[in-house]
Amino acid sequence: MNWFIFLSIILVSFFQEGYCCMKIRRSVDICDCPDIRDRDDNRNEINKTELWYTEGPGCARNLSCGIHYRTFLAFNFHESEIPIPDDAADPFALIISTLEEDYDAPPGPTVNMFSYYGIICENKDWYATIYPIGIRYYGPDYNGKFVGGGGEFNGLKSRVWLFKCKNPL
Image 1 (cartoon, rainbow, N blue to C red):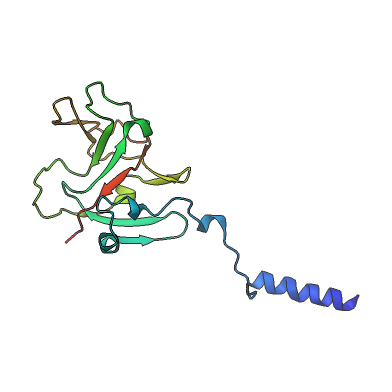
Image 2: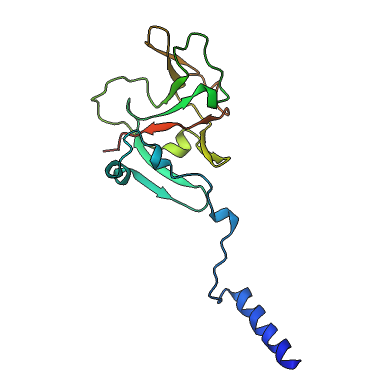
């Protein structure tokens, strides 16, 4: 009986001090969302490794991109809390990072896409919640139209379908 009490005390002290060989993962260290880099518009391993990307605990991520015409998130209005405009030609839209449309311009300031667009993990998927410049959709003539420039959509969720990132200089 004394051995049982002695061994119990030893085992309890090991588990309390963290000297045990077993590592217990806390639920806050686990992220149920997929690797967002798989939604990069280029979708190949070379570009995936070229992204300025780091992971923190849980779903904390940093994806650094330069503000540019080619830095955006794409979403489908059918997977968003934002209502589809009456004159939209299709259900897809872009959450843009700038109104500047010079395709060949150098990238602007570096931003963390996760904080810039308010990207969160919910229901095992990534959602944008901030629309810094608004959204761009295409009307019946397929010319770009802009809405939500005053932050009116901030707080509404849109599932991130894909993204494009102009690497910073």
